Image (cartoon, rainbow, N blue to C red; front, side):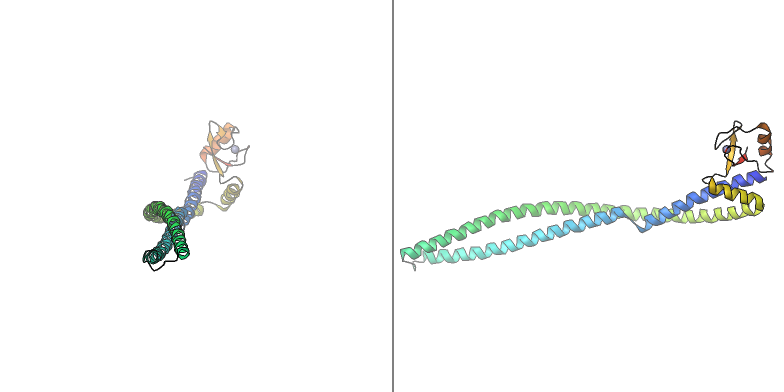
Length: 232
Ligand SMILES: [Zn+2]
């Protein structure tokens, strides 16, 4: 390979190195983090907690109902036992009974509401558990794929680094200095291809003489427009 072909090859290698290195970082990041899995797990936990809290409320209310039922039974027994004969006392026991029955009725309404809420919370929790299970399965597949990609990238990066070193060894210090400097200042594009007698990077026309010299490729010819190394 002549000088300019080597520089062009070096640039192709460097560009792929940059791309693959960037992708390797993305893959590492994706292997370490999965926001979707974290979010679906949190939603699942929340839904389960809400369901448990409602069930606990339900149990409390059911206990209250049992206690009230026992009280009502006691009052009724007293009322119909014939032991209470005083009309004033009978009236008071009767009122007490009605009050407890009203409480029981209110409690029944609350229990029905809670039952409904528990049903909804159960449905919601099932949905969230399903979403988490699905995300977990997807994640497991993603992890396998990402691990394969990481390994392939690592292998390719090793090749590219070797290739880069080999190409750089074949180039002289002056050419490397020019290339490195341009790569830094020209957004990674130190070498530009001549297309229809113009610089492929900036479009400024290249005189025929320079096109010939660039085509021979034994010396560095710079674009008069952008200063990049020209290759034909
Ligand atoms: Zn140019």
